[in-house]
Length: 576
Image (cartoon, rainbow, N blue to C red):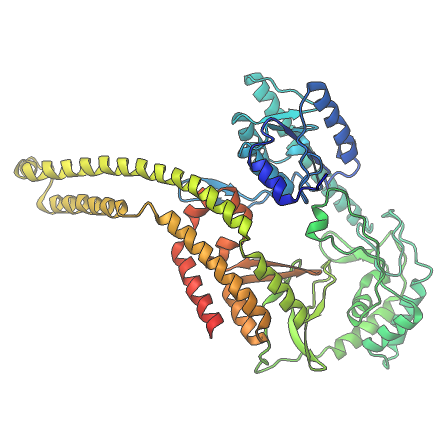
């Protein structure tokens, strides 16, 4: 039996093959690890029992990064929601759904590709008001949402029951958050270490006890003693640490987007990396080694969780030497290097600064102390390759273009129908204005004698009505084909970006920067993953799922002028 590709499965979904089937949604919350309901396996079992008991057919859909055999497994906090809200020109309120699989589920359900969804209970599918509204609207539109733990009657009492469950789900999250904050505040007030102890101490899950690491603690103390001698540089200490076998604490790297969307939880191994000069400097500047922890107001207080590894006298001596060697270098004229000031850390927003080493351009960032990004340096070719991959993502594939054209033909017809309705309203308004103008002209003397208008106000009113009439006539001249033309322009831009991609990979670094500056407003790096935001004209290509999901709103929000300007600028850039 041949294995179907994602493209074939998606096409089958869109054909309506599963309109009488259900999907199963399970969510493991990142903010309540010990809750039994938080177990994906437990949710799958309970949902399967409901499906069998109620004879609900599960769609045999397996899509990479979405579902396996009709079961969606997501690992995100349901309490977090995007605070950015957009109001469109026609009065629609939009906000971003933070859970990617839930977002795709909502898109499929809203288009009627599935009959409904099965989940354990209300707080598994939503724990914030924004998502409550989305689920409630789907249910009112006829989508069958089933819960293994609850049944809601199709009545006012059932609606109240649903509202109460949603309210308590959100309340539970707020209470949990408040308890955690209060507990953390009280512990820090007592001098308890509420965070991970640095290298040289052991983290055994007990905040009240952070013992010395028998292997690393003596080496950390020796680092302070060697630097205090005044003859050791940070680079020499890093080399000494490597020879002595002193490494950083074993850490797991941050999961990639693909790993986060995987249906099975990805287990990453902890890796102990060698210490760099940056690590050495952070160790030597950390007051934790003097027996102190960070208190509630950012200051260091005496710890009840651990003992001092070095004395205050030795620590102060090292700080004085570090301060004396800290020399700031300022350049009157910065050397021109590709991508200077363009790349930032995705977590702390610190900029990656270019520098030359052995004839190769590198980028380095002095990230914030609490930054979890371990990608502190890379060379020019690395980031240029990643940017090239981002450019490739902006190009519509043949399949996406076919789907976009198919949906546009249907959805632009909806826009045209709306346009005809607007024209009818405009005609009625024009008729009313012309009637008012006719009445004013025929009864001018009567209106002036009666004191309804004085000569100046009569002229102003006549000018106002004529201006309204002119505006309506201008609006009527807007072509119903505008949306089709905008679509064609976006496709042209996609084709031009495809040409720019080929040009980019064969161009010199300076020429590449011209393309990058033209297309991207923001580039942020997290580990080996580069994220981007496009400039105005290229935003039409930034999110393919928006275009494929609902071209009606997408087309109406596009600025055709910006798209055309982007086409001309990009064409000029790759010609020059």
